[in-house]
Amino acid sequence: MSNTDNDQQKNELSRRQWIGRVSVPAVAATMGFNLFGNTAVAAPKAAKGDNLTGSRVYNIRDFGAKGDGKTLDTKAIQAAIDACTADQGGTVLVPAGVFVMGTVELKSNVTLHIAAQGKILGTDDGKQYYAAQAIPLDIGWTMNDGNVGLFFAANADNITIEGNGIIDGQGRRFRSPVKGAPSPAGISGNHRPYHLLFYKCKNLTVRDLTLLDSAYHSVRVCLCSYVKMEGLHIHGKVINNNDGFHFIGSEYVHVSNCDVESQDDACALFGSCKFITIANCSFSTRWSVFRFGGGVAENITISNCLLYEVYGCPIKMRCSPGSRFENISFSNIVMKDVTGPISIGNGERDSANVGTPKTPGIVKNISFNNIHATVVKPVPLRDSEHPSNYNPGEIFSCLVLNGMNQSYLENISFNDVHITYPGEGTAEQGAVRDVPKVAGEYYQIGVPPAYGMYARNVRGLTMHNMRFEMASPDLRPALIFDTVQDAAVNGLSVQGQNGAESLLRFIKTQDVLLTALRVLTPVANLLQVEGAESSNIKIDGGDLSKAEKHLVFSNGAEAKAVKLRD
Image (tube, rainbow, N blue to C red; front, side):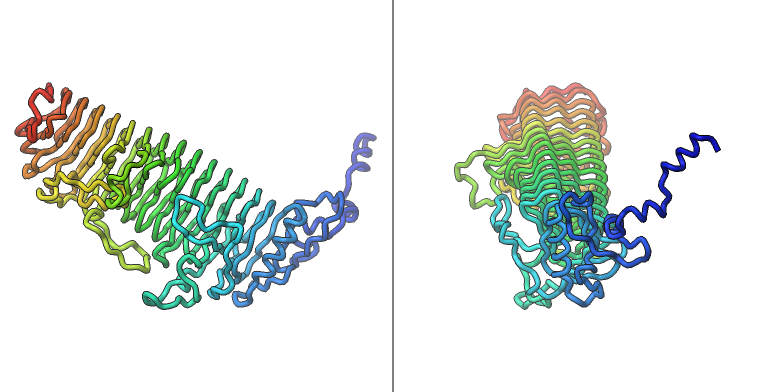
């Protein structure tokens, strides 16, 4: 052996020597198990200058948790979290077992790791849940939705919940058997717990978990920043308002690789949500997927998502007076078996408030790119434990851009959009001109008079390479513009029916350019123009051969309003 090799051997520590020089409790606490067996070792008390401060593992069994599916382990889990945060953070370990608990508070610098065979089971004893006093009931933009969580955190930083385990809220136990009767859990309404509730937290991560059957919404994030939701499976169809994600007034939020099956809103963004990305997710629900309402929502991208069996409205934006929605992009979205695919409303939610002077809302710079949708008549949601009743506007639905009175939608664009509709609309439905001026639920305008798109009070509308088809005959127009200004429609391909009043209808509409228009099936009339205000409409090129008549004018519209070159 050379001198060099001999020196190297002297300087290297054998595994046995290394273990002898490092304290067993310190190593075991860091690694989460005993080096000489399978029994977890309790984390040692922090010492000044200890190199393990902030990185220990706290096994909840070491704090008295039984994990037998019967014993209430709330105090043990809370004790482990309290010890962890007191030691400047670390990991609280939920090992294999079923751990029953009520409300537990998460705190700063704590990672809660739920092992693959570990389950948190929300107790069905409603007395074990309490409201988080640090979280106000009224945080703006939403109704009082309660402040009770199975897990909650308020004014905390650096929280992570992770692992391949399960959090089961036992939501069925919080459902009243009949209206007015108490639930088996003894609590109902806004006293029910969310799976996860966060308020004014920073650096928040939830990943790789299964969240089952919440008693209320699953994940509620209020006024938080720098949030990541990754790889979650949320399943809840046992309570009418089993929502998936609720983001309220939060910023720098990123959702990816999640699968959400919910009864109510799958991914709501209320209030001033900014700098949001949602990507590579799937969603199914009875109501909305991406729901916007109130405040200032801006700088948001939603991409590469599958929306299936959404018997409500996959993309629903409700801008009330004084609110603003701006710079929001939807791209690469597949909608399979949905109703009311896209609905944007700007104005009063309720007809009772129409006419009251208020600052108009702003809806501006909203884009939809590469959207493929199959619209169907709604049916009961698969696996739901609730009956489904549908309004007429849900049964007959289309793309709706709905501004009213002094409220407009501006710079709205659609590119590469292909939608197949179920059809069966009647000529009477298509003849409606007096569409209700409300911007509440998407179905409140009643049956849209168009089967493809109904647009009212829009400025700066771009439609490029769009195709509207129908699975069965529909006697409504394919497209209606009502008080639309500055629109460019290029490469629109549409089916129509001979019994319909017209394929397209423009009411009080100005400055529209239609190019490369394709009429796919025989129709009696191509375009009906209404109102003396209509002007500067140009149809340039395309295939109009299947239209028996090109132009019809009524209600004061004049022939000079349209220039046609086929």
